[in-house]
Amino acid sequence: MAVEPSCPVFVIHEDDAFRRTLITALDRHGFTVTYAAPDEAMSLLTTARKFRVIILGLDLKSERGVNMLEQLRTHRDVASCGVMILGDPDPAVRTIAPWADETLMKPVDVDYLAKRARSYCSC
Image (tube, rainbow, N blue to C red; front, side):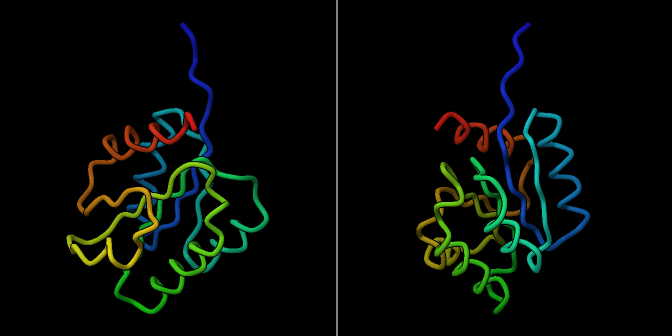
């Protein structure tokens, strides 16, 4: 049986419990996961290898969330394929970050998220 090559994913999420659940699901699906809380994320983005997918889960109505989006937008080249935003059920998320490749509204099924993330790994 052939093993799919690993796909480097960077997870940035404020909620520790959800972040752990997400990482477990992505590990199960064969991703190589790097993760960080928002305060640590930018230093990792600027020093780490390029990621195929960035999954960002923040309160986009907070100043910290909007600042993270702006920083990520200016470093858009750190993801050679996709940026996925996990957001509250609010259509304004697409106006806040129109450059994101995909927005999934919470609550999100982590297995579905892994399937969507896999679509960016072949870029």
